[in-house]
Length: 230
Image 1 (cartoon, rainbow, N blue to C red):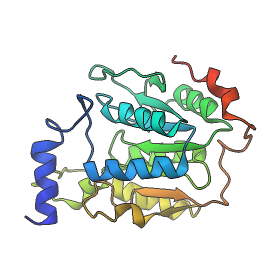
Image 2: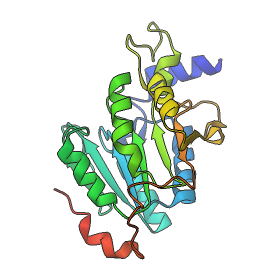
Image 3: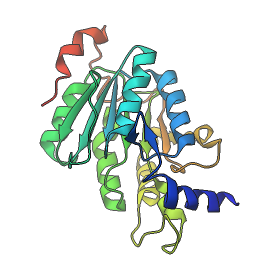
């Protein structure tokens, strides 16, 4: 079985029906999940913004990794909670359009002065991905990551398991990188080859300031009371 065949097999037969975390559907490539735990341990974000949570399997995965690390909160953004079924003290749920000014404002307030990482797994259309990256990239802390999921969609023809008829995350990522030299592709995060996120692990350069860290406080503990669901 070729690399392409394995990815198509996983997408068509595994990820939607047989991929779970603690019994909750988690629509991730397991090798990418391993990379996520490496990134979370290396960065130790105080806030992880997850744009698109589906059933909440990955949301719970991130929260429980943070339990092990000992720091962090997950802000789960989704426009539809009908499939979502997780709860954890580290998770804050915001329901609505992630591009709506009120949602962006709430997230920015929760991230201010805190080490922040952002994962985009929302609307996969090129224009929507680019819009969201522009809105949330300023929150990413120096040395942390802006991760764009599912660029693999653009590498398969429409007849394959991944293929679809519109441009998606990968060209949006290239558009974003052309405008933002403060981010670079961390190719080391693709070293297992079978990733769903080609050129999607974007690291903010250490000397590039962000909005989230502009008014950094001396202690994350002082912000814990701000992370309340609304």
